[in-house]
Image (cartoon, rainbow, N blue to C red; front, side, top):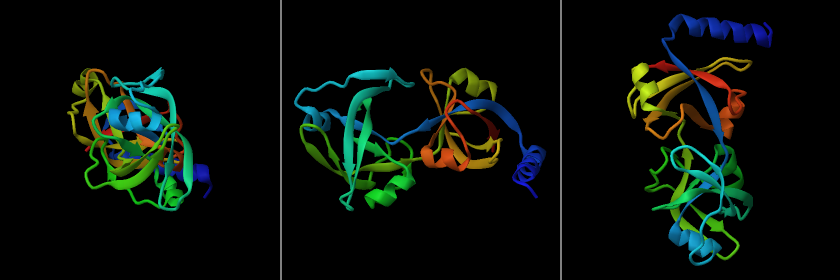
Length: 210
């Protein structure tokens, strides 16, 4: 059986069981860092303010600033982008592939849930920070506007499944949904998940309500 025939067979099987609750686009999240003001001061200088490069959803933005991550392996990942605005606690989001180089073992968590998570060293142009906790692999999650969520019978913090059609058809289970006025309708996955399903920014996936 060819690869295309396998893909067609998987799509046919999926179609028999799925309850379609809408199509949304995908956003692929690269590794990035959220900084507290205290850590921003240490890394870039006292009173430093991030420079906005691109506006993102949920009041966040991609900044012009980058940092370097150093793990117990003493190997570094350079040019890791900082996202703004500053947060109460510093958080580092990486992929499972990144952990092999850095030799760290972060948990899979929703953003903001950093209690007891992995450690790392962050290096900036003016100094370095030893982060005692804050490194996670972000869980797969979906951002929805309230109107879209209501139309499709989905609530904040629901968990849904997601179907990926294409050359590498895939089903993602237990994807967390967050609903807020300032969100766009978009599923966020890391680079490992994107590569496994041959997904790129802007491609479409189907929400399947559990």
